[in-house]
Length: 428
Ligand code: UGA
Image 1 (tube, protein in one colour):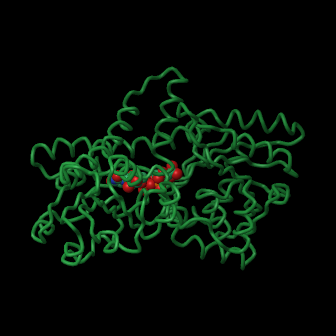
Image 2 (cartoon, protein in one colour):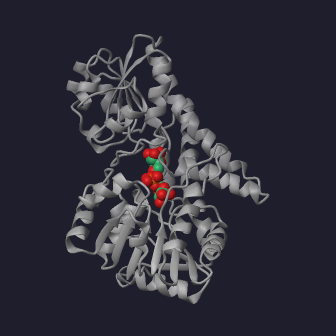
Image 3 (cartoon, protein in one colour):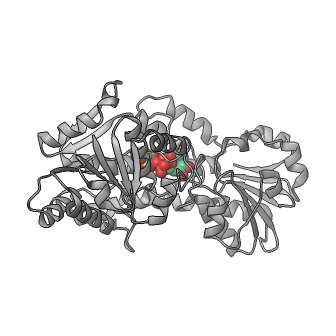
């Protein structure tokens, strides 16, 4: 099937690569011409395990192409995916300008009746606006609007796209469902379930999922605060909770909390949307407040360990918002870095992938080539991102290189007993 993908960010590019891999004829387009030029050369603009190989294979085999010209991408396309960003406005509401512009592009350049699929996370009701925009521009064409939200995790996006837990399709016509069934046949033939709903249900389900996952993290962080003050072990509590299948162990890792381009923005956007519909959900605000507290809590542990921060050197292990990505958007690690720098500390960070992106955000942040180099002469290490390599560090070497052997573990990655045995002042 001929598919156009508007927007080649994380979601769009993974969509391009995996649909081409499934045998579709896919063309990606983006307002950022430089990004397209790089993609044509097979260079992916961000780190995502497996993505570059899949893009190169698609380009070589011919199923995948990129163009700066939306007309080229849309010519003869049966489906157009809208995968552009929905960043927060000042009050947190999702800014849908890029979605509207994409719809206008689709309408102007479509050469035939077309299915328009929202993949970006959008507030419920966006499909109605899409329909209006498309038909205003091109009353001569028939548009089927479909909501097909992604559930990709950065760092595991290819795996999630190739083997999703479910494919969610919201549509309003048999034609819309039929097109999505055909497109995802390679998936459903492998046994992947397709959940079919109306448009509003699909749109709202995505926000509901992200807010629920964020709630699990904030819940365990709130319990973690009580555990800390009562001498209980939060990791063991999470294990006990997780053994109950009604709860599940996933997303119960207490620590610095969530970041990234999705949860922080989606939570506020969801709250604004509910307000617009006349529903107050203070729970959503509370989830975000607890999450903000997690960064402040880690900074205060550093303060308690070091007394005055002026003139002290603090090493951050991990700068990305989570492992397996170079993404630092809303990264708790950067929150820690900013607060420590503000308080007068020298901050040096090491991340296997995200050092450059972090440095671009915070000029005063020093970066180092590995964990030991970052720790050299440091008075305290803060583990900010749970990259597996930090779990395999040589603790003797780490201790020897530091000025004071103090570790604040923002992800509960280290074994407290082992850290204490190795002679560290350890703050979980
Ligand atoms: C999230 C969702 O997991 C995806 O299903 C969704 O498609 C995506 O948002 C999106 O809306 O596009 P992502 O932001 O890539 O994916 O990251 P997650 O793996 O969900 O992690 C989010 C944050 O939560 C990270 O900062 C992570 O460190 C933190 N986290 C996660 C915890 O603090 N504790 C946990 O137990 C789990």
